[in-house]
Length: 491
Image 1 (tube, rainbow, N blue to C red):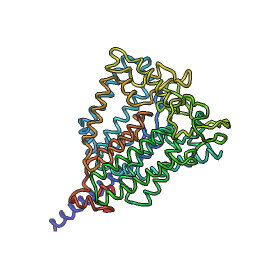
Image 2: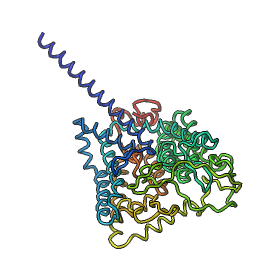
Image 3: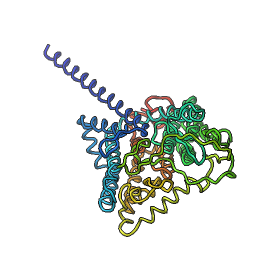
Image 4: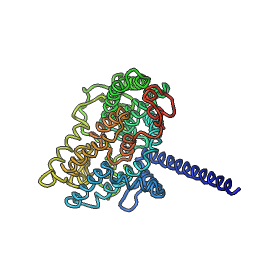
C-alpha cells in the first residue's frame, strides 16, 4: 500500500538520522578524549617556523575542524563568540596585542606565546560549542589522573635507584629528583595532578577503592613533583570542598562519600608533610635529609613554561632555557632540607621575589595602563640564576599585570567573574575548590598557557544537561550510582 510504504520510508529516514546523530556524538566524545589526553603531554613539541607546536595545539586543531564540519556545532561556536567569558578573554588578549605592538623589544619574540593564547581562546570556544558532551572530558581527566600521578612517582623511584632518568628533573639546591612525567615541568605536573584529583574526589569519591587508591598515589605524586604550592593548593581545595559539601549536602549520601574521600586524601597529604622518611622521597643518593642547619640553599628555579622545548630550546623562543634533563647529582654528606616542607626565603621564594621586583621596575607611565607586551620580560632581563638566559615571570598575577597592565588585570578579573557566574549551583562545590587550587599554584608557577587550564574552565562552567530531565531533588540527594544523576556518577 502507498501509505504503508511512506510510513516505512519515514521510519527508515528517522532511524538513519538517529544513527548519524549517534555517530557524530561518538566522534565528538572521541575528539574530547584526545584533547584531554594531549593536554598531559606538554613536554613534547616540534618547531614549525617560528612557532612551537605541542600535542595540545594539534588536538585543538582537530577539535576546531570537527566543530566547523557540523552545522549545529558551527552555529553553537558562533553563538559562543558573544558569550561574556569569550568576549572578555578576547578583549584581554587584544590589550596584549596592542601593548606588544607598542612596547615589545622583539615582536617576533612574543609571537609564539600570542599564538599559544589564540589557540587557548579557540579551544575554549570549541569546548563551549559542545558543552553538552563535556562530561566526557571531565570523566577522562578524572580517570587518567591516578595513572598519570603514578607515572610521576615511578619516574622518581627509577631515578633514585639509577635505573632511568626519564620524566624527572634534578634540583641541585635540595638534591632531589622532581617528577614531571609527560607534563612540561614538575610544577605544572603537580598543579594539574592536584586540580584533576579534586575532580576525582568530587565525582568518583563514592567508590571506596578509588578514594583509597587516590589518597595514596596523588599525595605521593605531589611529593614526587617537589612542589610545595601544589601541596598547599590541594589541601586548600579539599578543605573548601568539605566545607561546601557540608553546607549543600549535609546528611545526604553525597555528603558522606565526599567527606570520606576528601578526608582520606587529606590524611595522605599529612603523611607526606610530617613523616620524615616519606618527606625524603626523591632525594638523590649521597644527600641526607635534615633540617635547615645545613648549607643555606641558594636561588633555584626549574625550567620556564614559556620555553618551546626544555631539551632543545629555539633561539627564537620567548624564554628558552636549556635546563631539563636530570643531571647526575654530586654526592655530598651535607644535610639537605626536605624541600616539600622547607619554606625558607633562600630558595625559589627568593627567586620569585627578585623577579617580581625587577618586573615592577619596568612599570612606568602608560605601561601601568596597558602593560609591557605579551611575554616581553625575557626580552629585557636575564634569568637571575643563569646569565645570558632570558628571564620569565612565573607568577600569574604579576605576569598579567606586567604584560597587559591595569586595564588587562581588570578585564581578566572580569573574565573570572563571568566564568563563576556561569557555574551551576550544584557544581560550585567543585568549581570553587578547583579554582582556588589553580589560583594558588599559578601564583607561583603560571599555568595560563596550558590547555588543561581551559579544559578546566569549560568543564567547571558546563550547565546542567539533559540527564537531569525528570530527576527530582530527592534523587539528586540519594541517587548515588544512578547513571541518570550526573551530579554523582557523570553523564
